[in-house]
Image 1 (tube, rainbow over the protein chains, first blue to last red):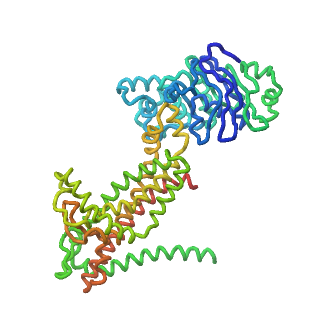
Image 2 (cartoon, each protein chain N blue to C red):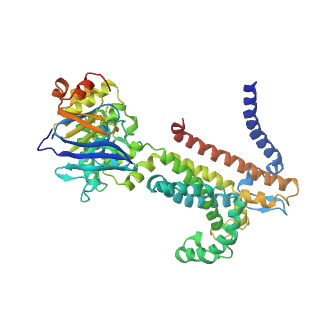
Image 3 (cartoon, rainbow over the protein chains, first blue to last red):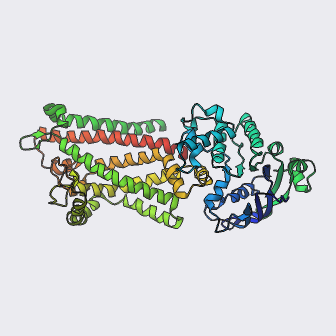
Length: 258
Length: 297
């Protein structure tokens, strides 16, 4: 898959934990303002790949990468690139809702904004982010309450609002519904579809129905015999689920393993 | 049968605490009867006239422990944050080990060092320079006649409780979930912003527990304090003046105490220490339990 106007591209990317190679020679690009799903069984390197895109991978001891990740044509691993700037342009949502436990709902949403931002601007940014995350109506009267008082699904939408408040171009989501109930999952999925009008979204999921529901494009990854994750194929999601070009994709989709 | 043995063994400790409390009350009865609650807020401590008021000792205990907890709290939290978040692994392990060894040094050794090394240093260097810079503050005014004073006691206590604050705070910080750090860093926060705005606030209850536990140790510390505090039951604004604490009075005077009232007064100090330590330690453990239970379960 090659999108010429892709804001985010990966070229020959390998990721390591110490001596262990978790991702091997992956190249792909992510279509602008669309949802791309990374699928595959546990241990196929999809989460590690995602974590390389905002360089959060490298905070683990012994973690490193080889290859190139291009954000709007700039190599994010170049020494010229500020990792802080990168992470503000590439937001992330995690498996488990993880609002900051000592902060209020409002405090969480604006936690990524600089302290020098005036209070009124913060309030406006918070409202905008909470509206985008479809949470505003539920929390507008209790912005000062602790974030931990919200339900799991609300907490996850709060984490999405927190990521949106810093106005990223790309949103990375690492199995964002894996700890949520079916109703909360549905609301997050609807939200993803809506957010894709403005943001380039990359979502890791091992729920194939979810990939089918939310994503326009999908990539299928599999670990090779050295347990390094490799890209098997990438295509439009509808095509992947109906006419996959690789036998292993078909086996996975039809439930023969994974 | 085994069950009975278990209950008996644990019941024994409850009984021990109750008996200790009862015998302290009984032993201090002559003083309790003679002075009543006045014991707590009168300043005369005079074995010759048999007048006993514990206020200077309470003052000495509170002030020396406060100095210790402020200094050890600041240094200990920073050290814990460094060990848990910043230090490379090859350095963090031996450093933690050394800090925990520091906790195993007998307090009499701290006392000796305090008396022969720290006290002279305080008298000739530290106290004069503090007075030179901040002499307008009452706590740094007044004559510097001796190195065995409130400041030296506070410093020694700070050093002695530092391992407790550091080791427990480190444990609490390490127990904070990794995904909170990642959430913060994924928003573009630096490591330092992440630690200071997210990790330490999330660990605050446990850190507070560590400080309260250390405070309990500072209040009860006896021999090291006795060796460096000067042992004078006076209330002075200056930290350069000698003082006295509840624990050091007992350690210093129990051999020479005669008469029911004198002995009663010392035992009443013991009762006071017993109650305060009981409450402070209970509070600390309660706080730490709520924080660390999830991690250890």
